[in-house]
Length: 496
Image (cartoon, rainbow, N blue to C red; front, side):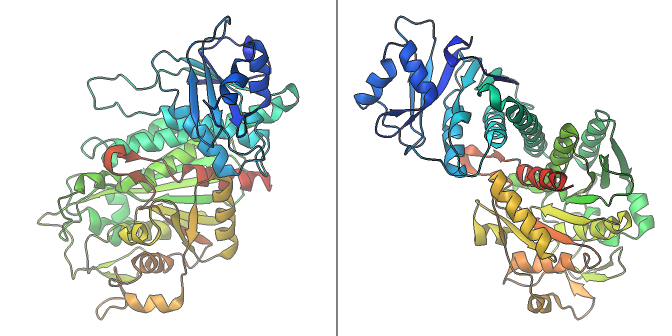
């Protein structure tokens, strides 16, 4: 989809639909006021008679504009006539985008960046328009014979005053990059497990690296991992006929000797649970167990498109977890790359087994910080629902930076404790640790397990089990936490 920034008066733009805001108590936004003049008072008449109350997220679509060259107008409710919160602004944008999925609308002009939003400038507001529209028009068609999509939208024109064009263009660049990163993560995650295998994921990362001069890739095969002593990671892939891959993306945007930011994404392209087999109901959604890896690829793409002045490394351990005669068994003990031994009490707690060796592997890069993201525990969904992702870590400054980024990006996270007392739950009579800690505090004990392999660097863990995809009639990947990670990287760039 194409985006552009325009300062031309709204009514002079050539498009299929104009979008303007309306506040409660029959108050028109500046752009709506200008359109009201052009339409001989049509908009004020509509709001005065109560057809459009202006409640936040309300929509009124005008398909016929008498005595006017304007084709259509979409009125969007903005609530009280005062600065909106970030979430209320995004709610208005989401309602707008959702109501423009009509086959006869290919170009639209949006004036909503003029809305006053608390602690937000033109750059942020324009960026959110691009992200929201990009998210709304995404539709998975890869494995459908009918490629028709609900939305035919091709162009979004964002109107801003002349003095705001520089900030608006900067916001548009960010919004497009993040939106396309989200779309890539969603597409990879929505693909079925028979297509999106570890090898396919590696191929897509390779294609991405070929599009950017500053982006390199290396891929470790199982023989390479065995030579490095990654017994924990390789134990997971034993039951699969698909070879595991450790995908290593390197973005060289910063100074040559600047320490990199390392992103580690769990890439379980299908998780049957192994010998500890999952229940059949809902197992199809275990194709989404690679959403962490997909989000790392999407975030690296966004960083490359924005050409951020950072060195970023994306590590994606990709594997399947399947039952087989050679698969991991409960009671097995494996030696990780770090030399620590792990007793497997549940083969369905496999994400931490591939992540721990990857965290050890990350040490060689002398990272500034390491952030891992994984659809790791159903316990996180129980604890936090589908609104925030779980956050745990060993560095307060890093965790606080991620929380601040989440608030700006509206990609919510909530920090959980990582207290030493929880480590007691991982004790094993036969190995250095067990891979599960019992029924209590499952999200925390999973992070405690990972923390044992992150002692030599600043580290944070994002559990995205509740936020990476939706179930039910709206089943599909969300692309989270690409917006959060992209904002964190933008913040790091701005701090240089």
